[in-house]
Amino acid sequence: MAQSKPEDTEQWKPTPAVVTPAQQVGGPPSDAVVLFDGSNLDQWVSTQDKSPAGWTVTDGVLTVNKARGNIETRRSFRDYQLHLEWRIPADIAGSGQARGNSGLFLASTGDGDSGYELQILDSYDNATYVNGQAASLYKQHPPLVNASRKPGEWQTYDVVWRAPVFGGDGAVVSPATATVLHNGVLVQDNAVLAGETVYIGKPPSRPYTTAPIKLQAHGDPSAPISFRNIWVRELPPRS
Ligand code: MG
Image (cartoon, rainbow, N blue to C red; front, side, top):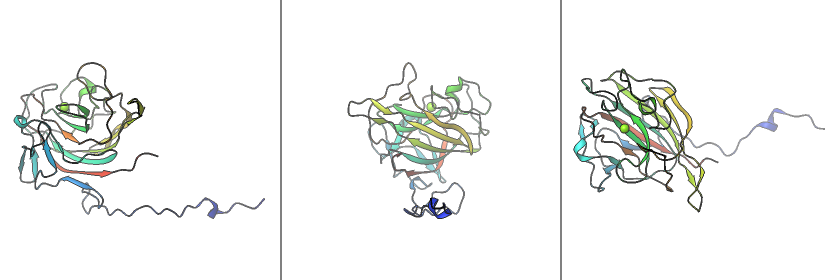
């Protein structure tokens, strides 16, 4: 038998596509779709009626306008890597779920709060049910750790979202998964979703192929939170 050589286990093709990383840490790499760069909301619409998103852009920062409801991306996505930065107001008041509540819906499957929510909340010093605190996959998975920064400080989410795969009969063939870093700390490790986020009861799984990404205008009375630097990289389906 011929002797094994190092070359036997070398792979040369196909060569990975070249992606140029951003100069600045956290910035969009060359193949990203920039969803918000501080200038305008052209990539976003109102969830309710698909009119131009009515949230506020000031000094490069996007702030929730609760009166205008949720906003979502014009484009729809399937599997992706996403970066988003958010900030709870320094003077936030309230407690529990009524303290800086917003949310990143990884896939918006319809009106209102339908979809798969990664919770945004002030969880620096604010007790609530753990599967509803910041970086939870709401009502399904608490974060592995609480990596929250103080109100007034910018925080980051980096997410890898794998959409659920549905069979021809509408049944889930492979469930959605999410991996999340909060401020660079692993908080969701390939977490498997039971279905869509619901406040009460068992998560439903309504078939979809691609969906917008949605930001939540939560109805609690605390001051509205802000966002900046949002981008997404579409990923090929998991093989
Ligand atoms: Mg929320």
